[in-house]
Length: 269
Image (cartoon, rainbow, N blue to C red; front, side):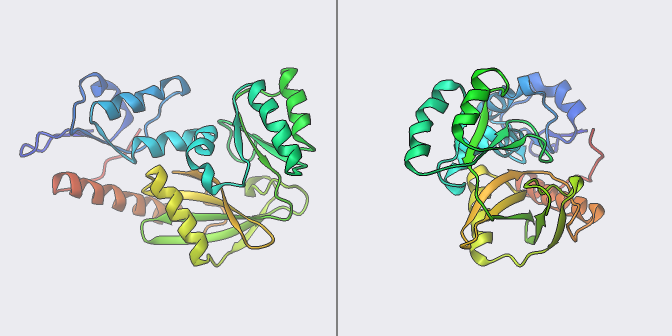
């Protein structure tokens, strides 16, 4: 659906089909609301839209970050476990081998770039083991590498404007805590420092709402693990209907800011 308020001339695109139709003609001031369903080879369209002055909600940076764990590590790495890096080729790994050795890092975790639900996360005994596997073609570049944080607690934080809730996730039989693959969960009381970390990362990535995964070390230090615009709600108190209503409220607030009037919600494809 596309709306064009006569007083502003702004076109408002609210579904992917209309976006595809209008993409060549979108101009500065036009608005695209909702997540774009782009293929991996199309992500450069975010840059093109930004250069043309087309406004996206959520913003292009947030949408691109949601799609790439590697981009998250490059842009949001300051909040992650120290010495997290992106391996783009074997040279990146070789450069880090001495660094990891000097700092006493043992086990490490790798995250494949576009996998979700814990399916792309792997634990290795050392960075040397990662290097060997990658050099022999068993691990595709690029991927994220970070020291394994022994005893850390996995916290999922859902932030939708003023709505905030958090819950822990754990699996007594595996370091993968995904709730669809044997994990369990319970309510977590988020500390002001933990919420501030989430908000800071969201601001840097221009996330108007987010699912934020934190790693909380045994000493209480919190680190950003991942961030996404969407995620599963298993373990959360908010249900899907209420969640979607809050997303629509945020969409409507953005449209009021842009046009002074929010058009009625339409189903997206």
